[in-house]
Image (cartoon, rainbow, N blue to C red; front, side, top):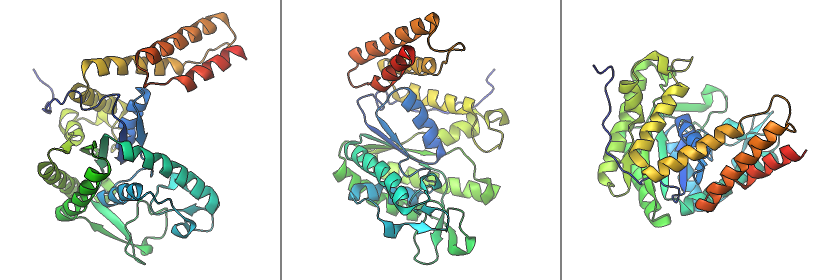
Length: 330
């Protein structure tokens, strides 16, 4: 007897490989997937603007990365305590304008270089609702806890999203010709919008993505993360304590479905080796790093990392090896 509805996904073995530079942008679900790919040592960049929720803010971010135009002080705002950018998440905010620019532009430069060589762009839309500054109509990535009176709120239409993203896709075809886009819709429910409005928002995103994937089928595809959580994992045990975010188990399951859909057997086996090393690196000895057992453990782990580097020259464990060597020589 089956106890869940399995979502059918067409296999695209080889779509995600270690040779593909990958950029992930979008909601915190993008960060969940990014964390897995980071542990597995893929060549990736995750959310260079911080968490972005709506299609317009994500489009603005990609457009800015293609412009090769870093941010300047006149694009920042200040609330008396912190300097911040309406293009960025609040985690980039700093006490001074220069500190904020340093953090923002360091991340911007790194992400801009990644986009120019990007071969897989994973986009996660979270909501169709946007907030715009009343003063100039700009869509903000984050309201930075500023008064609601400064913003207007509206829900993008399917046509809004399709028109905007058609422009982005056309530009990307010229800017990064090897880039393929994988769209997802975040399974995280935005219940502050209300249950019904959340459904309307998610439906808008799904319809827009379907239109884009049909129009640009050679470049765009869709992974049903939203449907997996809603149907395969239709149980509150797969949610975190807030009952809106997927639990760690749910995220791991979604990643496993991505692996079976997009990884070749060789890629999967290498990812498993890398994740095993990642877990081993989290181990800390109870009796300090200078005991014999831990030294043997560390030396064995270093040997495993060097083996992977020899087999796969595009993977580097230099930082991890150096940290371990320092620990056992202190």
